[in-house]
Image 1 (cartoon, rainbow, N blue to C red):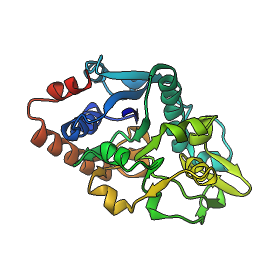
Image 2 (cartoon, rainbow, N blue to C red):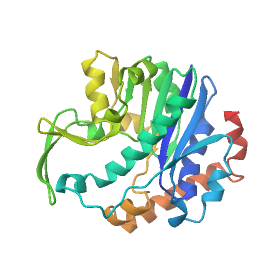
Image 3 (cartoon, rainbow, N blue to C red):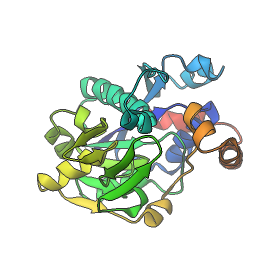
Length: 268
Protein backbone atom coordinates (compact mmCIF):
# COMPACT_ATOMS: atom_id res chain seq x y z
CA UNK A 1 0.00 0.00 0.00
CA UNK A 2 1.11 3.53 -0.70
CA UNK A 3 -0.36 6.81 0.53
CA UNK A 4 0.08 10.29 -0.91
CA UNK A 5 -0.25 12.65 2.04
CA UNK A 6 -1.42 16.21 1.32
CA UNK A 7 -1.11 19.08 3.78
CA UNK A 8 -2.13 22.69 3.16
CA UNK A 9 0.09 24.83 5.39
CA UNK A 10 -0.14 28.49 6.34
CA UNK A 11 1.46 28.53 9.77
CA UNK A 12 4.58 28.95 11.87
CA UNK A 13 7.33 26.42 10.96
CA UNK A 14 7.15 24.83 14.42
CA UNK A 15 3.44 24.07 13.92
CA UNK A 16 3.98 22.25 10.63
CA UNK A 17 7.05 20.44 11.96
CA UNK A 18 5.01 19.25 14.95
CA UNK A 19 2.41 17.80 12.58
CA UNK A 20 5.00 16.08 10.41
CA UNK A 21 7.14 14.99 13.36
CA UNK A 22 4.35 13.48 15.42
CA UNK A 23 3.04 11.58 12.39
CA UNK A 24 6.51 10.22 11.59
CA UNK A 25 6.97 9.37 15.27
CA UNK A 26 3.95 7.04 15.02
CA UNK A 27 4.53 5.90 11.42
CA UNK A 28 5.37 2.18 11.45
CA UNK A 29 6.37 2.07 7.76
CA UNK A 30 3.87 -0.69 6.98
CA UNK A 31 2.94 1.39 3.91
CA UNK A 32 4.89 3.66 1.59
CA UNK A 33 4.30 7.38 1.93
CA UNK A 34 4.99 10.54 -0.04
CA UNK A 35 4.34 13.87 1.65
CA UNK A 36 3.20 16.97 -0.26
CA UNK A 37 2.93 20.33 1.51
CA UNK A 38 1.38 23.44 -0.01
CA UNK A 39 3.01 26.73 0.98
CA UNK A 40 1.81 30.17 -0.05
CA UNK A 41 4.15 31.78 -2.55
CA UNK A 42 4.29 34.87 -0.29
CA UNK A 43 5.02 32.87 2.88
CA UNK A 44 7.92 35.19 3.72
CA UNK A 45 5.46 38.06 4.08
CA UNK A 46 4.12 36.25 7.14
CA UNK A 47 7.19 34.59 8.66
CA UNK A 48 10.98 34.62 8.16
CA UNK A 49 11.25 30.85 8.60
CA UNK A 50 10.78 29.71 5.00
CA UNK A 51 14.35 28.40 4.87
CA UNK A 52 13.71 26.26 7.94
CA UNK A 53 10.81 24.55 6.16
CA UNK A 54 12.59 24.14 2.83
CA UNK A 55 15.36 22.41 4.77
CA UNK A 56 13.05 19.38 4.82
CA UNK A 57 13.62 18.89 1.08
CA UNK A 58 14.00 16.20 -0.35
CA UNK A 59 11.94 14.34 2.26
CA UNK A 60 8.97 16.68 1.80
CA UNK A 61 7.68 17.82 -1.59
CA UNK A 62 6.63 21.46 -1.43
CA UNK A 63 4.04 22.97 -3.77
CA UNK A 64 3.78 26.74 -4.30
CA UNK A 65 0.25 28.09 -3.81
CA UNK A 66 -0.91 31.53 -4.89
CA UNK A 67 -2.67 33.34 -2.08
CA UNK A 68 -6.16 34.72 -2.61
CA UNK A 69 -6.76 38.47 -2.71
CA UNK A 70 -8.26 39.00 0.73
CA UNK A 71 -9.64 42.42 -0.24
CA UNK A 72 -11.19 41.46 -3.59
CA UNK A 73 -14.90 42.28 -4.08
CA UNK A 74 -17.08 39.33 -3.07
CA UNK A 75 -20.70 38.43 -2.62
CA UNK A 76 -21.81 38.14 1.02
CA UNK A 77 -21.69 34.32 0.77
CA UNK A 78 -18.19 34.39 -0.72
CA UNK A 79 -17.04 36.66 2.10
CA UNK A 80 -18.42 34.25 4.69
CA UNK A 81 -16.45 31.38 3.14
CA UNK A 82 -13.33 33.39 2.32
CA UNK A 83 -10.99 31.30 4.45
CA UNK A 84 -12.43 28.08 3.05
CA UNK A 85 -11.68 29.49 -0.41
CA UNK A 86 -8.04 29.94 0.56
CA UNK A 87 -7.77 26.42 2.01
CA UNK A 88 -9.56 24.97 -1.02
CA UNK A 89 -7.21 26.68 -3.47
CA UNK A 90 -4.24 25.28 -1.58
CA UNK A 91 -5.64 21.74 -1.54
CA UNK A 92 -6.57 21.86 -5.22
CA UNK A 93 -3.06 23.00 -6.17
CA UNK A 94 -1.50 20.21 -4.11
CA UNK A 95 -3.89 17.58 -5.51
CA UNK A 96 -3.13 18.63 -9.06
CA UNK A 97 0.62 18.39 -8.46
CA UNK A 98 0.28 15.05 -6.68
CA UNK A 99 -1.86 13.56 -9.43
CA UNK A 100 0.92 14.27 -11.94
CA UNK A 101 3.79 13.18 -9.71
CA UNK A 102 2.77 10.37 -7.33
CA UNK A 103 2.87 6.91 -8.90
CA UNK A 104 1.19 3.65 -7.88
CA UNK A 105 -0.60 5.04 -4.83
CA UNK A 106 -3.50 3.23 -3.19
CA UNK A 107 -4.69 6.01 -0.86
CA UNK A 108 -4.73 9.77 -0.39
CA UNK A 109 -4.58 11.35 3.08
CA UNK A 110 -5.56 14.96 3.66
CA UNK A 111 -4.21 16.65 6.77
CA UNK A 112 -4.39 20.07 8.31
CA UNK A 113 -1.15 21.76 9.33
CA UNK A 114 -1.79 21.83 13.09
CA UNK A 115 -2.09 18.22 14.28
CA UNK A 116 -0.62 16.12 17.07
CA UNK A 117 -0.51 12.38 16.32
CA UNK A 118 -0.73 9.88 19.16
CA UNK A 119 -1.10 6.87 16.86
CA UNK A 120 -0.73 6.42 13.11
CA UNK A 121 -4.21 7.51 12.04
CA UNK A 122 -3.26 7.14 8.37
CA UNK A 123 -2.15 3.53 8.67
CA UNK A 124 -5.18 2.70 10.79
CA UNK A 125 -7.54 4.26 8.23
CA UNK A 126 -5.90 2.41 5.33
CA UNK A 127 -6.28 -0.93 7.12
CA UNK A 128 -10.05 -0.43 7.52
CA UNK A 129 -10.36 -1.03 3.75
CA UNK A 130 -12.96 1.75 3.57
CA UNK A 131 -12.97 4.21 0.67
CA UNK A 132 -13.48 7.24 2.90
CA UNK A 133 -12.39 7.38 6.54
CA UNK A 134 -12.74 10.33 8.87
CA UNK A 135 -15.16 12.21 11.07
CA UNK A 136 -17.91 14.63 10.18
CA UNK A 137 -17.33 18.25 11.08
CA UNK A 138 -19.02 18.77 14.47
CA UNK A 139 -20.36 15.17 14.10
CA UNK A 140 -23.14 16.60 11.94
CA UNK A 141 -24.69 14.27 9.36
CA UNK A 142 -27.70 16.43 8.41
CA UNK A 143 -28.16 19.84 6.83
CA UNK A 144 -28.04 22.81 9.16
CA UNK A 145 -29.53 26.24 8.66
CA UNK A 146 -27.10 28.93 9.73
CA UNK A 147 -27.65 32.61 10.33
CA UNK A 148 -24.64 34.66 9.31
CA UNK A 149 -24.07 38.38 9.76
CA UNK A 150 -22.89 38.81 6.18
CA UNK A 151 -24.81 36.30 4.06
CA UNK A 152 -27.98 35.97 6.10
CA UNK A 153 -29.65 32.55 6.29
CA UNK A 154 -27.83 29.67 4.54
CA UNK A 155 -28.18 25.88 4.56
CA UNK A 156 -24.88 24.15 5.20
CA UNK A 157 -24.39 20.57 3.94
CA UNK A 158 -22.50 18.09 6.17
CA UNK A 159 -18.85 17.53 5.35
CA UNK A 160 -16.01 15.26 6.30
CA UNK A 161 -13.59 17.05 8.57
CA UNK A 162 -10.80 18.39 6.39
CA UNK A 163 -8.38 18.22 9.32
CA UNK A 164 -7.73 14.49 8.91
CA UNK A 165 -9.25 12.11 6.37
CA UNK A 166 -8.15 9.24 4.12
CA UNK A 167 -9.56 8.33 0.68
CA UNK A 168 -8.96 5.24 -1.40
CA UNK A 169 -7.58 5.70 -4.90
CA UNK A 170 -10.87 4.19 -6.10
CA UNK A 171 -12.81 7.12 -4.62
CA UNK A 172 -10.19 9.69 -5.64
CA UNK A 173 -10.36 8.46 -9.25
CA UNK A 174 -14.17 8.39 -9.17
CA UNK A 175 -14.14 12.14 -8.59
CA UNK A 176 -13.22 13.08 -12.14
CA UNK A 177 -13.12 16.80 -11.48
CA UNK A 178 -11.10 17.16 -8.28
CA UNK A 179 -12.15 20.79 -7.99
CA UNK A 180 -15.57 19.51 -6.83
CA UNK A 181 -13.86 18.13 -3.73
CA UNK A 182 -12.71 21.48 -2.48
CA UNK A 183 -14.63 24.32 -4.10
CA UNK A 184 -17.23 26.18 -2.07
CA UNK A 185 -20.47 26.61 -3.92
CA UNK A 186 -24.21 26.95 -3.61
CA UNK A 187 -26.18 24.09 -5.19
CA UNK A 188 -29.99 23.78 -4.99
CA UNK A 189 -30.08 26.01 -1.95
CA UNK A 190 -27.32 24.14 -0.06
CA UNK A 191 -23.84 25.46 0.62
CA UNK A 192 -21.06 22.93 0.05
CA UNK A 193 -17.89 23.79 1.93
CA UNK A 194 -14.47 22.10 1.54
CA UNK A 195 -14.91 18.29 1.34
CA UNK A 196 -18.71 18.43 1.62
CA UNK A 197 -19.14 17.24 -1.96
CA UNK A 198 -16.61 14.45 -1.40
CA UNK A 199 -18.86 13.00 1.30
CA UNK A 200 -21.89 13.43 -0.98
CA UNK A 201 -20.22 11.75 -3.97
CA UNK A 202 -18.92 8.84 -1.88
CA UNK A 203 -22.48 8.03 -0.80
CA UNK A 204 -23.94 8.57 -4.28
CA UNK A 205 -21.57 6.14 -6.02
CA UNK A 206 -21.89 3.48 -3.33
CA UNK A 207 -18.44 3.73 -1.80
CA UNK A 208 -17.64 2.21 1.59
CA UNK A 209 -17.71 5.15 3.99
CA UNK A 210 -16.45 4.83 7.56
CA UNK A 211 -17.34 7.80 9.72
CA UNK A 212 -16.15 7.86 13.32
CA UNK A 213 -17.11 10.33 16.07
CA UNK A 214 -14.70 13.24 16.40
CA UNK A 215 -13.90 12.02 19.92
CA UNK A 216 -12.76 8.64 18.55
CA UNK A 217 -10.48 10.22 15.95
CA UNK A 218 -9.10 12.62 18.56
CA UNK A 219 -7.63 9.66 20.44
CA UNK A 220 -5.51 8.96 17.36
CA UNK A 221 -4.78 12.50 16.20
CA UNK A 222 -5.64 15.85 17.78
CA UNK A 223 -6.51 18.94 15.76
CA UNK A 224 -5.32 22.06 17.56
CA UNK A 225 -7.06 24.62 15.34
CA UNK A 226 -6.67 28.41 15.28
CA UNK A 227 -3.10 28.18 13.98
CA UNK A 228 -3.27 29.94 10.60
CA UNK A 229 -1.40 33.22 10.26
CA UNK A 230 -4.09 35.62 9.07
CA UNK A 231 -7.52 34.07 9.63
CA UNK A 232 -7.01 32.48 13.05
CA UNK A 233 -5.47 35.49 14.75
CA UNK A 234 -8.38 37.65 13.63
CA UNK A 235 -11.40 35.36 13.86
CA UNK A 236 -10.41 32.88 16.58
CA UNK A 237 -8.62 35.53 18.67
CA UNK A 238 -4.97 36.00 19.44
CA UNK A 239 -5.47 34.39 22.86
CA UNK A 240 -6.59 31.13 21.24
CA UNK A 241 -3.68 31.25 18.80
CA UNK A 242 -1.13 31.81 21.56
CA UNK A 243 -2.62 29.11 23.79
CA UNK A 244 -2.44 26.50 21.03
CA UNK A 245 1.07 27.63 20.10
CA UNK A 246 2.16 26.88 23.66
CA UNK A 247 0.65 23.39 23.38
CA UNK A 248 2.42 22.86 20.08
CA UNK A 249 5.78 24.06 21.37
CA UNK A 250 5.48 21.94 24.51
CA UNK A 251 4.68 18.79 22.52
CA UNK A 252 7.54 19.43 20.10
CA UNK A 253 10.05 20.02 22.91
CA UNK A 254 8.92 16.88 24.76
CA UNK A 255 9.00 14.51 21.80
CA UNK A 256 11.74 16.02 19.65
CA UNK A 257 14.47 17.57 21.81
CA UNK A 258 16.91 16.96 18.94
CA UNK A 259 14.56 17.97 16.12
CA UNK A 260 12.88 15.75 13.52
CA UNK A 261 15.71 15.23 11.01
CA UNK A 262 16.16 11.60 12.04
CA UNK A 263 12.45 10.92 11.59
CA UNK A 264 12.36 12.55 8.16
CA UNK A 265 14.67 9.80 6.90
CA UNK A 266 11.74 7.41 7.20
CA UNK A 267 10.49 9.01 3.99
CA UNK A 268 13.50 8.01 1.89
